[in-house]
Length: 78
Image 1 (cartoon, rainbow, N blue to C red):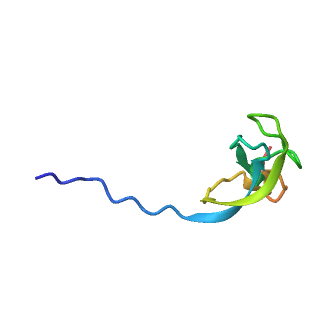
Image 2: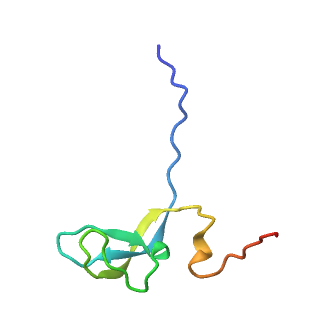
C-alpha cells in the first residue's frame, strides 16, 4: 500500500482585483493595477494602450503594497 505524506492542498483564496488589460484584439496581456507605475500603462507585449477592468485573482501578501500610493510608513534608523 502507498501512503502519501503530502497534505491535501488548501483552496487558494481569491478576491476581485483591479487590473489593466490590453485593448488589442489578439493580445492577452494584463497586470495588477497596484503594480503599474503609470496612470494609464501600455502593454509590455504589444505596446497598445490598456483598459482598466476587474479580475478574480489569488490574494497576495506583499509588504511593499502601499509604496505606490504612499500608505506604508518607513521606519529607518540612522
